[in-house]
Image (cartoon, helix red, strand yellow):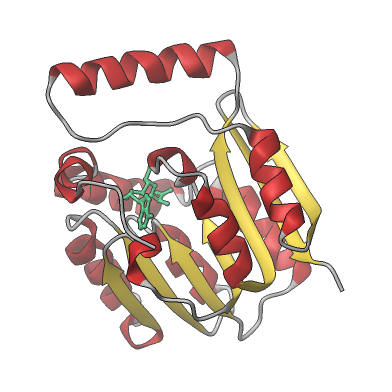
Length: 213
Ligand SMILES: C[S@@+](CC[C@H](N)C(=O)[O-])C[C@H]1O[C@@H](n2cnc3c(N)ncnc32)[C@H](O)[C@@H]1O
């Protein structure tokens, strides 16, 4: 499958300063409000020793939490080249470098089809134009899949239109997408999953699915 995204846009938006800020927030206050309940729901299902695939791993704050909570090894992808150094420093500081295989690039374009027991994407589906990403990562998850994405409300759509207008004016080749949450769930269920947990804030919705027996 070929990629469709210009990494320059991702680097401009998800830059080193933004990555460092995210790590500082994690060290001071812990995980963000979507990653925290997603990981709690995964813990309730159990992931001791499990292999993890995180697409859009960003500053690796969720990855660190999953590994420190008992996951075995992880493969991580992020399109933005700015995250590798900051995420690498966080992983090294926590003594986790040897348990993570990090790739800078578009997961869909990578051709990597290795399965993982747990697949995790927090606030990533909205940063990728092609909803096919959902079906692909669902196919890779042999046991559990956790996704978060923006709710499809008038205010999220208006805010994202404004953000995209601003990016267009600044000539940044990156856009945000509000994919249909119903279509996301249908893609996951079609891949053989059942929902085991979910929640929502004003902006975000998250779900954890388990592969049906
Ligand atoms: C809003 S950030 C979220 C980062 C992290 N998950 C978090 O919650 O802090 C979205 C990230 O997803 C990455 N991304 C989007 N689509 C991707 C893909 N197909 N392959 C790899 N990374 C992707 C972007 O580069 C960006 O760093």
